[in-house]
Image (tube, rainbow, N blue to C red):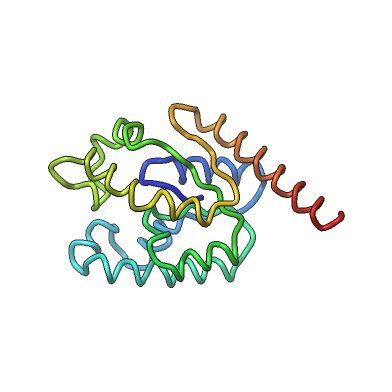
Length: 174
């Protein structure tokens, strides 16, 4: 799962893993376990560049492990090495939501370091503008999350992944 902060990657990924009976991992949780503090604290102490380097290492390790469902951090697509890893190692679903829907979900969130600014909606619009094309670049499927329930989004993710698998099989003559 890739997408903006608040798009539902963790909630949808966890439920998808349950439905598929596959291991679920959240790259942000893996990072927090590794660093022994919150991403916000690490961001404040070490800076974004150090965090992005660690994020790249964790994604590469998770890509090597294979099998399962992975929710990534919202900025995972910033680095070209991460985009290459996503395309090489995963079937990627972009959970798409508008900045306005994201703001509605995140307006009281204090954990996301990039949103601790005077105008979080403007920041979400800025991040969306910078990242939307990158998410689409790596996505095998795009699922709108908007105001849909987690269950409805998971059902749509499953449908799109099955359709993508069928299309690949047809192309291969299977």
